Image (tube, rainbow, N blue to C red):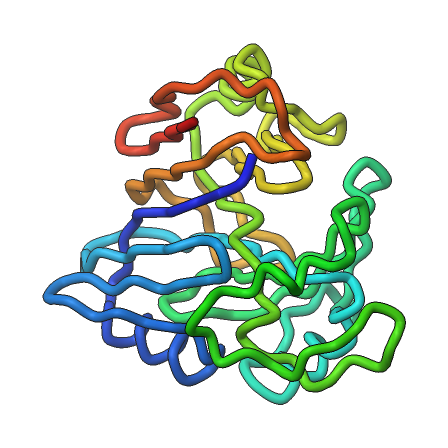
Length: 247
């Protein structure tokens, strides 16, 4: 389920634009009351809402060969979030992935995730216009990490009133459900993109103080090579929270 676009809110478009442009080096387009960020193959649009509550979560896909370079880049920039003394996180076996978490603007928990079951030549899909890092060939020593190594939005966190029922509904639409979910947390999607369904008030891992709220969000996705069989349509997950699956 490749995530094509995300439309949501931020308490400060100025802070959000400055972070993504100067800290991560991503292409940013500013307009009155909104800002668009291009993350590889995904466009994220933030509309300003100073009264928005809670904190958000997004994960950005990277090539597994770029993981160590990503760590160095983040350590030198925004810094890494930790769980005790751990800053690198191996996912559950069903995910076959590893992650680094870092703080973003307006208090989101951001993540870079390397999914080993995806093709290892993902760097070829770097977005045009990104300030791309040095190119590399699989199997060689990679160069410095840069914004061109962020290939797409891989995860979007969404609060829903009933996690299990929502995950079941998406499963019926061909949007896979991972086996490590619970009543308050359930990933829904595939290795090429997923929604992280969570209960209101839960803290975003690995923090204890960045909490799930209910900002409006619309995610537009399409079936990819890793996610055939998705039923197209518009899915109202909760008031103001929508998934649109297009051809």
